[in-house]
Length: 214
Image (cartoon, rainbow, N blue to C red):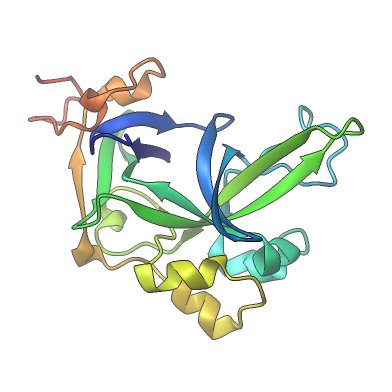
């Protein structure tokens, strides 16, 4: 999965969020919501050397409450990852076809995530996050095996508010987003090229051969 973020001055794709690249993440600060730059791929605060750690870019919603390393983050370090869309790839034999997925009528929405902070002895701070994934809805089942947990607007505030969530609250908040409220379209294979970071990567293509069509 790769995220697409929206430009501050337009709704076109302006940046592709890939692991190890800093992206804006929304957290609950002491005076309200804060937008913090974080690296995608969570590095536990207990790690001795982040360069030797194995960053976790996704974590399954179903097992969150069972993993000791994520329980404290689930309680106090939930976050929102804003996006205007995301990419997934459908396998057809040896071929991978990229698709761009959006939430209808929401130019900007949020994934549910967790974050952590690592400090070195000199006090340098490294903030990292992971995206929570959940079961598929009917639309996403046509292209992939998992989907990110997209938050309904009503759940965004609850996600940021600290404190424990019971099983029912967690299940409702991280449930698959309704398929009828999402759309997807095949896009150019340009999205596979890290240097292609502009509106062409989200423009639908006429055919599924993966070639860019102006």
